[in-house]
Length: 398
Image (tube, rainbow, N blue to C red; front, side):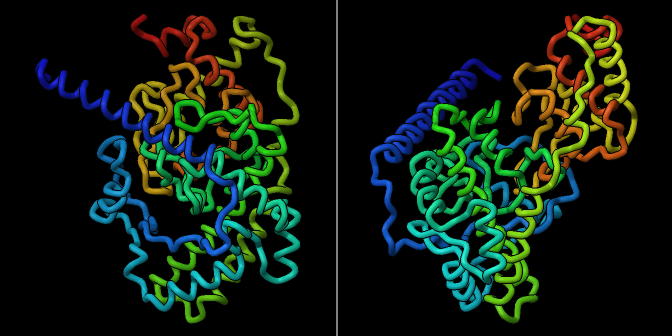
């Protein structure tokens, strides 16, 4: 790159950063100083952005770019994927779906989950009572909407970042501790408390616990509503919906049940009995790290090294379920664990995988083997915590 090109690129980066800070500032200020009440006449808007129905079978050509997500989605079809533009669906069907979503889920000012008594009762057991949701909606507008937007689509005015804010409408989440696609409310509040390292998602630890709990409830609500919309639109594209309201109701009932099952699912058994491997540098800890290194580097289709090439220095890019590019973590870098570096969270990621980004689960491993991987993965960024032989393999050119 020539000096002039470097200068132009530098000016572009400075401008981009300044513009992004300005957007964030406007969004944050508007959130802090605007009224906390929605107009009773405001409805959730119809979905207009593309749905990702099938991911390409080929690997992404490169990482995602800031501000290019919509264009990247439009290119998935040419790469062998399949997307759906909702504007191509019959207007009458979309109107019927909008009406049904309003009947079942209400409005931003008055969010509800109002279906049959059984489903409504299940929603209330999830904490989605009418009064709580109304309070949570006002809080979400103030604290989260600038990034996650009114419908939870992750396309708010301050969302021009990579990775993009989470789109809750797909119904999938990355960080759970129960092996389910849905998180517990405690999983959501943990993310709110700690934030996500390496992303624009900050910690909300300064908020009162009751407010973090309310935000988690509203994320659940937006996800249920958005998934019903997603699945009904997808079925309409396949011509499988003779009765739009009936189909949407069936999906709403099933999705609420999925959330309740996940809320009641036990945590991974291996989290109940953490082995005492001592401190880094002790013989027991070094033995665990060596065993973890051997498991990490085994040659197999679902082995860690397959995606985290050279321990993450040369990752294999993949598409996630939202159609964006997922980059496996560079484990040689400190503070790289988005979903917390605490041992129990690392255990959960290895045991249950992260289905949304293609990271496989490992049910075939014993709890002891998973803990060995935890010890190794957490030690990778700190060469002094690695036994000499493992250190030489991970850092061959000190």
